[in-house]
Image 1 (cartoon, rainbow, N blue to C red):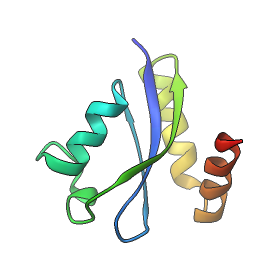
Image 2 (image 1 turned 30 degrees about the horizontal axis):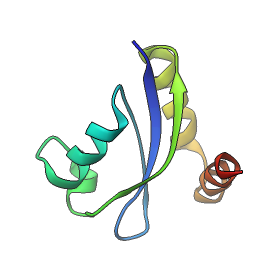
Image 3 (image 1 turned 135 degrees about the horizontal axis):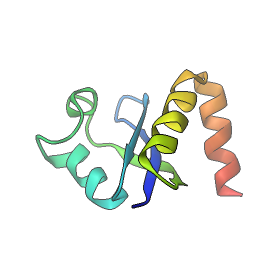
Image 4 (image 1 turned 120 degrees about the horizontal axis):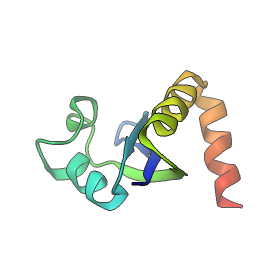
Length: 84
């Protein structure tokens, strides 16, 4: 099963990083479901800025951790590179 690491931009401008097997479904959960993360519930609506494919849950979790340690500027640079 493939996993994705994703970055969302919240309504307050903050960035949220997570993992999922279905980016579209997870985005919908963040925006309108009780299954969304506690962090994003009070910062709706959120929009998807970045997604990255991982081969399994373990590698996705490791990559999520790496991204979460990045500064905001580095995260924005990662997002910008993916748009090119």
